[in-house]
Length: 430
Image (spheres, one colour):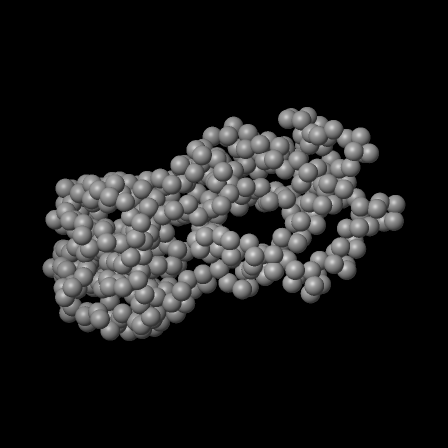
């Protein structure tokens, strides 16, 4: 019989909401419980596939704020596995090291938390008699600036060796250096499979030996978009080692770009959005969709979309709700006014002046950046990090705010009372 296991990491149970745009209470509750649901889905998958083990390569928790209710939930889910004869192997990651729960919680028999001196466990045996040995080293502190690879035992001879490691490897955008090491170093160590964790994007770094970063099983905001998954690993004495990706996320964040170029009527513009929503919903048969809708193209309705942004958001939310299990995180209006920039249109002329002589200047950029800095100082740390976690990100935010502000001002100028236009009404034409 082959030996089979599920490899996951970075569940971040008790993770706080990261998206600042979750104004809908029902949606906020959905996202808040999504990480717990992901663990339940993983356990259900282990039971359905009748695997031999679940391996968790760090960051079960999100830090020191872990609640007792979540800890008890975790124990109950792990007990479902051990009661079915499925072993669990896990290591602490940098976030787990912040939580006292990982040190004080009594785990069920059959759950092996790598810590202390024992860093290898025999997990099973193949039909040809070879042992399957799991190795792991946990984070003792929240930071690990040096490689943990020297702490791992050499491969057990005549066995299949699996290593659990929480690492940023040689570096990844958006991630600080944690237990850094090179893929070549992992290959040279001699294990048959490296079960990695820490970086939230799924990547198969190497085959033979397999070095796999499974990504997180549940995204938490739009920057963790796309279907999230775990890895099912099969070790067969004849066929060797093979892997499969299995989707686990119950809620999927997606960016949905809709070209509304040339749309001249409100109803037609909503129709394009509805068609795009329907197509994406049909392609994602299961789970909730949480969407950031991005409008592009040139349309004479661009200014009214900006002026009546709240009404437009309500329209799009209604369309999403009609599709079932679909939610709108936010709407980005990146479309532009289709009115020609000539002397006969003073608003278009002002727009051209702003683009040419104002928005890109050093003075404008500096003033915008100063305003962003003032705002940042007034915000809590976690909000500052979510908005802009580097100087480059702050500069990009300042430039985007300038462009967005200019577009909103122009929209309101074009919506002057003299144009005689009434605000759009639901399902009506403009």
